[in-house]
Amino acid sequence: MMKMKILEIEDIVEENEIIKSFYFTDKEISKAEPAQFVMLWVPHVVTGTVDFEIPDQIPMSVSSVEGDTFSLTVRKYGETTGELFKYRKGDKVGMTGPLGRGFSVSGNCVLCVAGGIGVAPLLLLVQKLQGKEVHFVLGAKTKSELLFEKKLEELCTSLCITTDDGTCGRKGFACDPVDELCDNYGIDQIYCCGPEIMMHKILEISSKKNVPAQFSLERYMYCGLGLCGHCTLDGYLVCKDGPVFTSEELKSVKDFGAKMVDETGKKVNI
Amino acid sequence: MMDVSVDLCGLHLKNPLILASGILGTKGELLKRVADNGAGAVVTKSIGVNPRKGYKNPTVLHVSEDIVLNAMGLPNPGCDEFSEEINLAKQGNVPVICSIFGGSKEEFSHVASIMEKAGADMLELNVSCPHSLPRYKGLHLGQIPVETKGVVKTVKQTVSIPVMVKLSPNVTSIVDIASACVDGGADALSLVNTVQALEIEPEVEKPVLGNVFGGQSGPSIRCISQRKVADVLTAMERGEIKKVPVVGVGGIESGEDVARFLLLGCECVQIGSAVLKYGFDTFKKCLKELEEYMEKKGYNTLEDFRGNSLKWLV
Image 1: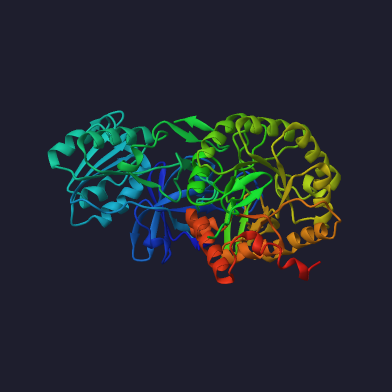
Image 2: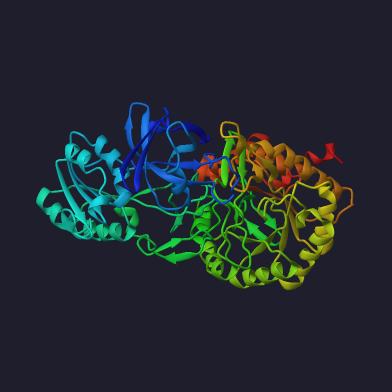
């Protein structure tokens, strides 16, 4: 049963200007597989005022685990994350999880491809992949938004950095070097999390090269528990059947890389 | 040879287990998947005239093993956008019942007519969403018999497919409401919708649901539902209300639970919150257990035991 728990923020690390990692302790959530997520409730009690617009709950994947301690790495983006960024050590948030199906570990020479904040679940995956040959492409818009490059350098066999504006590493998107890296290293499994357009490109590459791939997807979620059906993707539930889907599954999903459901349930172009 | 099929207002259902509204019913493909996984019929998410966002999260809360709270806020893409989903859902080859809501008789009849054209086999009128206006604490449509009757009558004049009305348990007399629906021409009744509820988080000292108020479902409301169903069915038995099929809803999660509602005299049942525990396997599980029950009792059809418990109540 997935009951919400109230957890205390034990530590906050500012990763860069727009990204913070929040550390918590919980025996169950710290067992999360990479890309499994929690529904994170930011209850808006810091200021003590009653404001019905702010309280919200969003899906958030676990970015690292050490013993019973785990972290969520959050990009300041909307109202809820904006509110969370005001929180300090000792403040409390609600959490339900771990939820969904995460990455399953397979392959001996793997390539992880991260776009932006998509690196969060892949960092946890890399921790679980120790002992294997792990190559990593880390992409961000610009140098100052690169995340976890030091940790990844230590943990991975090779690290390739891309930035959209060319301020660090190779200029372009994280999907650009994938074709070449697959050939160079004889990659037998690809893991991917980032913007869906990028993941869609990687699905094409993985199909062409016949390398299996796993992708962590995102959709607007209400319940996160597999009940309301809002996060549906061609008959799959992203919250329950996913968020991780295999290349095999996604090949026949027509909305992947094309359409998503908005808050009302209307399909809109990605 | 055991036969669990049932006729509901002229629709043939291979079994009496119907997916309840609000669960997984957002898109045709999901409804088809539920049908492919054993449901006898499916009900869509409630659809209104215009696209509507849901409430702020948390919208669903698993409070305890037996208590589920929700305040979704009727998110839906609007009836025009939803039309094509009916077609997709019908590929599941089970009857597709479209749940509709509206703020007035006119809105109800507009959505009803669009959904009939889209191919819905039946309508379920959601007159009883306990939290359809943000933090609203006043009466809703389904709590006022004369209003409910008016809506049912208007929809019945608009469409020729059968019309079922989903009743709220949050009323002084569910028999009065049931009676108003039947007088308005309802072809069937489903009961009950969720029970008005609220949860407070003690550590942060505030309500958890984004909308504050919500509705309770899950096994904790099954006995409440059984009582309400019994009230309506006994009134029909006594001739106080015209007899129409009654569909039992509320906390059903096993074959024995299904049997309980059929023993009271229900035509069919709807299953919703059990999906939290058993996912898409819910319907196969309940059906298998229902058949085991029938096997044990030596029943071949649902008629063999439907209403057997009602004699204790009339």
